[in-house]
Length: 298
Image (cartoon, rainbow, N blue to C red):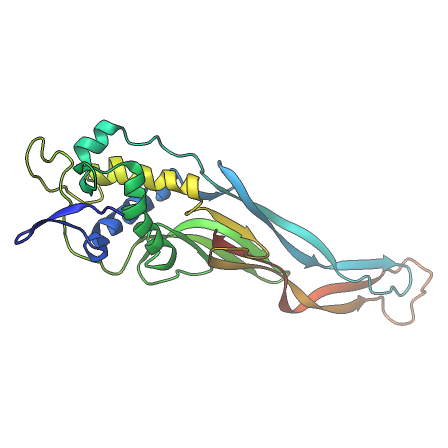
């Protein structure tokens, strides 16, 4: 697997190590997070545009009443759907970087046959993109989502809005979609790959910031395309997690008990008259799970 070349002050050109790539991969994750925050390729939303990957309904038990001219039996509680949520992901992707872009804004690798050449999309995907995705899935999670009732912590998380609302008869719990846009610290150091313009116009190091041509015009489009071809950054939500990495558990709960009360006319009145007898069944007790789903990266 060919890696980007870097300049070593003593040994000349050398392949970059995983540690050398840490900062470049981090800047790519931050750039991808910026795209997600603005609703671009790969972003997740509730009820908007994109490919549907899950849905969930907020349900609760309701009060019921029996009314009549004599003593009434308890009716038992009812149920209702308070809200429904549909989850989608923008699954379209950008075009591949052109050969000219790869040649003029990319970096050099060592090819066993041709010597130093500009890295192709496939070669970039196998090195930088692979390491970036690994860090997104099981590392610092920058550029990925979680669903939680509170900020997950451990870096900068942006609240992207309500994901699910769990309503019971007596309370409401709001689940939010959180996007991680930065970690607590920037990993690695500024180790720069060698420009793909070498040796045509001389030796040059490539800028690796989030706004650089390398990140914006080459690495970011290839990362987004990998999302489509390998499902590496796709999300799902269902009762059973069948693969991947869990990023949140969402519960639709209902109160577990019932309180029966009566509202009858005073003693001594005529049961067959115009007096109204009522028996209420009201949800009570603690919240119990009715439907639990897992939000995860597949």
